[in-house]
Length: 401
Image (cartoon, rainbow, N blue to C red; front, side, top):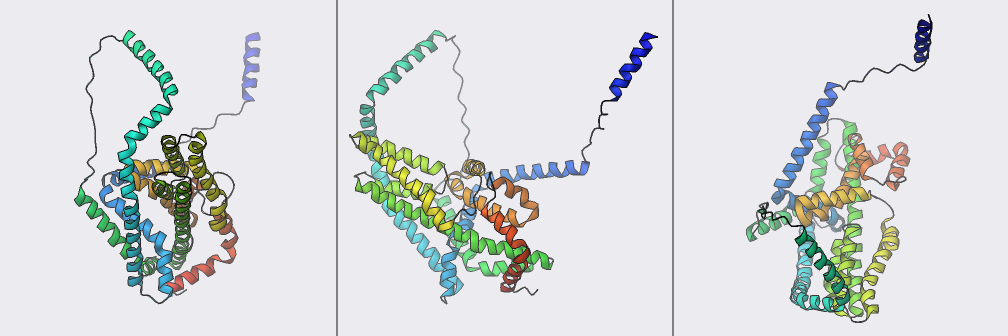
């Protein structure tokens, strides 16, 4: 009787707990869709890796066309035809690259010839630290000898990727880059009109017109302004380092102007290179520290005052997205991939703000804290200006409401 009473009490006690919910099953359609998406992404990454000989100049041409499009637009407003304006822009761009190369390449060769002497100077100045490191290395070698068990050396296997190198490949990529950039600039208005007219509905045409408007007015202006800021930073850095007697100041100025497109990583590399060069050049520790200090100070002024003043806090992207984008594209496409990583992230962020299907991508690329200015502007303009701006952009492309 007591056993029955105890079992009934335990049954009543367990009855007070919530019943476990039935296990949720994954929808086969959803699972198939995600599997197909994963396979598509793997195939896309493989294509980007193995087709780098064509994709690298193509993507670089697209980014370059977006950056220099404000110059072409300015020339067209002065009555110059689109084809001639594109030709003038590309010619000026190529001549600028040639002038930069003529100034930087001899300096880089001279620096390469001086590297052994600079290494000897650094070794002499760091003799005390080197002695400490030598003692540690000897202790490690003794420890390794004491723990050796006579294993046979393992063969080294080297795996390399055929980059299709050579002068012919470089000439092809350079020519493909220049020609594609020209056509993207000369025919950009016609391609915009065709892209808008290709949409099936009027609402899709308006959305496409707004996306193209954002690319033309915000993204291209942003990238062009950033490019001009980096060029100015390089000139000021080179002049400041030359004034203090730093050799190869022109090369360091070119490096900061180019590597400043790589947020966080590029300036650190230039500061480290300036510190090594200062250590090999100057005997006074004040001058040794002044070189990297100048580069750091100018970078902070540019990042905290000049850029916010000229372009504001618009189009900010997550540092995590920056690091991942630079790492992935740098691994697949080398230095060019690392340089175009941030502009591509900005384009994806702009697309994600206007295309609902890409909104999760925009959330991952966008700022990690708070709300960006673009998000606030989008919310404020959604009710009042969205239709008006879309109709204006569509009408410019030849679309009637």
